[in-house]
Length: 456
Image (cartoon, rainbow, N blue to C red; front, side, top):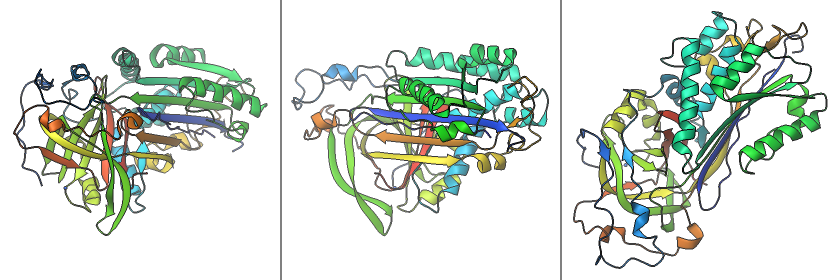
């Protein structure tokens, strides 16, 4: 049986961090929201340079950071494509729609799911139904070699683009029982193209094996994930394929003003939550087609959070049905840098989900059946050709807050006076359920995505 867990992240109080872990295990077959419409800009988007306060500007509270914090150049150009990766978007939309009635908070990592499915495709028999179904999830990638090059370049880009701010860490490792011999070609492919390693453990000693895996996960996530697996996870498995994505993002434009206010889960039901607020220049668009506003909140580095806020108080359901891949990408290309008053609730939650039914609904079926072809995983008479995936589980989490809450919570900064501008300020008040996703903008990959019905 293959099990996959994906963890979550636990955040520092002064950072916006995210963590996600994906685990797969295998066992033997035999055993079982009114705004005027904006115009589409042309050319390259660049952050305004007139935002830095000039000498003589109205005094700013001493707790504000120096003007230098605004000179971190943020050049935004949507990733070159007419749409996001189709499989990731379909996966997200399917999950969000399935959880709508329960009004659950949701967070998943589409990239982590795709990466694990790509690794499984390397183990699948050539030109088998299993391989074809797995490769079909890698949108616009037509062959196994292209899949390999995509992930090799993507993972290298992650390291290059994020090394300055150390915001993103992706690690993958296949843990096997000590009697398992993995195919040499599979081992070499994992190392060269997917930056992945294989480690043999004595699964017969489940507590010791679980301890070793948990130590590795704890080190990768800087102590944020210390109990990834349990001995029970180990004892019924012969392999565990683990993928950890740890994201710790620091806002380019931090929030310094907080207050408590009402969040409307529905028109007739509300709760009190902690809000963060600031006024600054952000990329923004109002979409008539999706009946929603979309705002880009950039982190230092090459990652940004996009928030999709429905116009109507009870508009989350309509938004989810209208949430088409190409419409979201069009909205990103139509964004203009405007002065926006952003009011965003803090939110923190965990989420766990089995992806077996969802993946089968999207066409990935045979890896869960006895006819699964995964010969590249193992060699030896005992297990060769006798493994399949019994389930794919993901456990994720998110903690969004302002940097320096304890230091800056009592500070009131009238940012709108800083620029000496008389233009109208766009209101982006996230006081109702919304959708969000975090995109690695150098590659266009959706690292995390979800919806919030009730900030915690």
